[in-house]
Length: 357
Picture 1 (cartoon, one colour):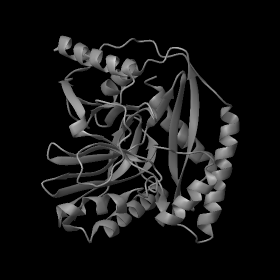
Picture 2: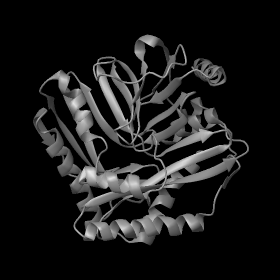
Picture 3: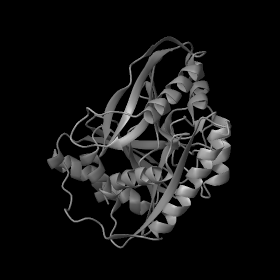
Picture 4: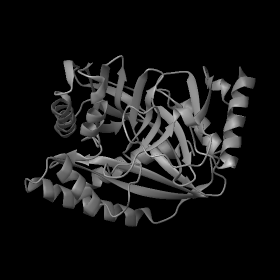
């Protein structure tokens, strides 16, 4: 088995040096690690949601979604059952912040306060703000980082994605946008964050519960015209890396297969990465964040592959360019938010990715 796994990663190494588009990924709580490698360097844009392949979408839904069409790719896979199957060096990459974190803190808290004032004025219920933290490394190894993520985040969607016209992204996201198999539809509402301290039995403040309910209500109102037999779980606590979140599971049945695109468009960007009302929050973000989120808080995954669709929100991710790793982190802002606390929440989330560098 170890020889097979070693051969798999050797092929990924060849792809990296060939400069051809590819994606390597593992779905949550699975052993199978898959690779789709495009046979040429064409940048293919998704036209219809009945296409088949691996999609990569930006936060700004007015921009194009990239697809690696299955018919234009070669595919291969392996299985990783135990941590011992992936040997990684113990030493971490030598990384340091590219800019002052103190300055970043002041800027983030200033924008958070602006969002709080905007919400208190009655213009919005929730706005999700984010920031980018750039790290410089002299010895960052993409394959070693991927192996560490596979070993560390079993319940996340782990991936590395590359296209020469866009760049290299990788991450371990805990949030599913949606899954559809035989017209059975599954999604989740995920919001609220606190540090994991050896137990899932924690208390959630009203701010987190309200935030989570905002997300749940929005999803239900968005999909009710397309889905029958809706079922909604009670909120429960899940662990993602060293953080805890509140989650509600939502299932149903698509009224028609052709409605898949409508549901994706109604869900993305979700309140968990954008806010409510969606268009108002999105406009505030694009105007005030002062950087381009690009594919952070977009979505990615299998579209009509192997008789199912599995799309995930692109959280806990980073973009790698030469010796710079750009981490993307954010948090939901409501009227009860405290700017300094929101900053430290992003710091906790950044530690998730720094842990595997």
